[in-house]
Amino acid sequence: MIHSYAELRAFALSLDLPQVADSTAWGNPCLKAHGKMWVWWSPYIDAAVFKCDFDEREMLLQADPDTFTLHPHYTNHRFILVKAGHIDPTWAAPRLTQAWRALAPKRWLKTWDAENPL
Image 1 (tube, rainbow, N blue to C red):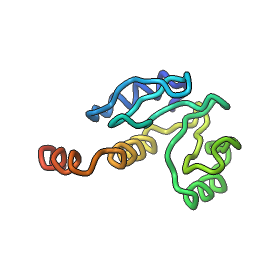
Image 2: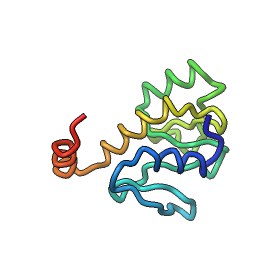
Image 3: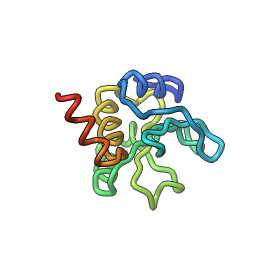
């Protein structure tokens, strides 16, 4: 399980996805992919922030409230918070990869996919 931003950062970087860089947003550390926020820790509660649509967020909050939470700051945004110590790398890896792909410019991703077949 991942317990801190330092562990989350190391894990995200271990995915070895290109176009990822350390950065800050609103004075807090984050990783950006393709110049956009990709991985960060909530400054409001001890939890990682993951992109998530509203329907899935509701399902996750109901299915596992010990793992997933929401802070009022994120209510109107497509994010879910995963509490420190509850972040399962097997859940996080595909979620981070999916978010990384969604942030990539489509032309760039098409070329990258052609050069890196599964």
